[in-house]
Image (tube, rainbow, N blue to C red):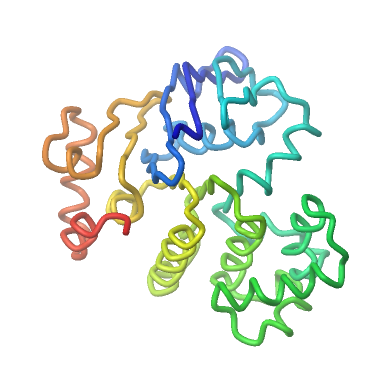
Length: 268
């Protein structure tokens, strides 16, 4: 069943086109990777899906979620979808979290907004979610402020918050870029496991091809605001047609010892 349908999405800032006529689909439970270098338009594409582009952006085209057009919704209407039906994990958890609010309240916020539960019940569920994402001493964690936690702990908080309401779609925008290699692997495994348990669809945005290939089933390669290639992981690595895609594959093979394991493992 088609969950997300993006057609001819174009984003401009003034006279500059940053996303150019992008189209793709995501089925329920499917995992799509969007890969490209900095400035390719991959993050702006993901932000357009969830309605978080700056007000200065001029957007045309169509973004449908469960058959409902999102591009013409008000902020209030979009807020009823964000967190409940579409969750998002951002690149830098420290800036994504409210520095003045204890993290337990931030995890509980989507539950309170969308399910109408009390603060007391929300905090109980926040503790349970902290346990689920592998945070030690969750009673202490929920009383902490973001700056009191490590980068890996903050990203786990972001993941717990994004999945609190069991959304049908999770968007992860460079979720491990700010983390060291060991913590990256832990967070990626956790995300992989939780998405599988929830049965959520996933859009995984990254510049790292081996990581994308380990987390997704299909990959959209973006360059200069366009999707230049869209294929299954296996097809892309075996038979890439675009020169830029081939360059990404060669670079990954040279730079990552785990390339073979990652690309043959794919999303489980």
